[in-house]
Image 1: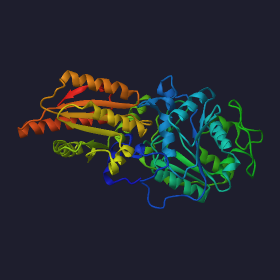
Image 2: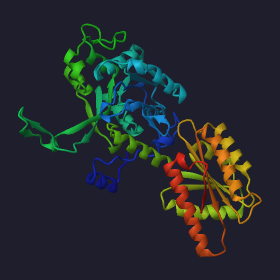
Image 3: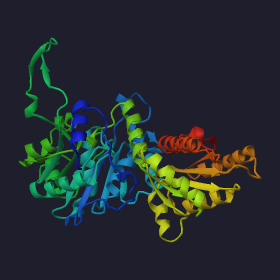
Image 4: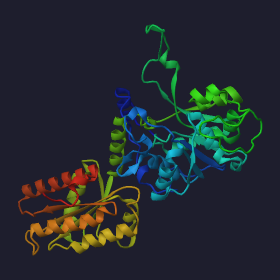
Length: 457
């Protein structure tokens, strides 16, 4: 991921600040339209996601990987980050036995096609080993296995490519980040013993990549790959395993196992600041904010072909652009304009003159047919511009409320804005500015509380 000087300075000022993941959240599975030309691999790549944690540090009853962000569990966002990469073949999610049904429901509900769930072990290394075993020898010679945390949803394809190719070349590879704080050692009495020179050390992050041969040999005492059954959750893998009981019980670093037991010195790759991990309850709020921000980057304005609608859309494009959202203006969604249905998650429908709720109904029907609201709630804002109308304001508000109730069941958030035209230039400018502010807030916040409301500009 390219980081400019401003991003670097901002990160140095606040290294704990969650970084923006870019626009990958809106990309469909298997489509990599941002990648450099020719970015691909000629060897099998699979992923193991250990997701068996209980999330004790969040203080929540629900494990953090299953906590809901915009109506969708966190683990689904992480899975999507890998499914969108066309050259990744499969994703194995390793979950606690009691969460197998829950994970299966997530896979089915959000139509994850590359994923299967397997039961995990009682510790992190046992779970990762079970995931590797689930991949099996069928991965083939020269296959690469990427290990990643289920609660790090903002991993980008460029880094995955670097990790996969480096693992293929060197046997193992892993992402690193600069240390934020100095690491110190303490005495048993609680006093400072010594500190490490921070410049010489790095924080080990995820993802990490291994050839299948290296990761399997790191977990077993055999020089060649063999087929094994998944170990029970409360026991170590089969007898004769290379890892000690201490490794399986307390270890967390896969790269260390590859070095210690296979002599494989991992290639270390500088990772972007988006690799942060959801650990505490506040991190869930930060992750949802980042997702909302990513989804609010652009919107499609449908003018209906009227000159007044086009004029309003032009004014909105300038005003909303200053607030961080790029607008594409189209008269309708026919022909080439239908591409907006496949790429946008936000729509502004401009109606001029008499109220026509049927226009809104038609748009909602098109969005439902395009199945665009499966992974994220879509936002539709109906901007009605008229001095007088056969339908009263209360009647129009009732129409918005009725339409929104049905739309919400389809994961579409419908809002209404009433705009009164004015021949006074200053007053008109204020009204347009007000519409721009309202649309930006509605697109950014995706507030369920305002769904079905007719707001006055």
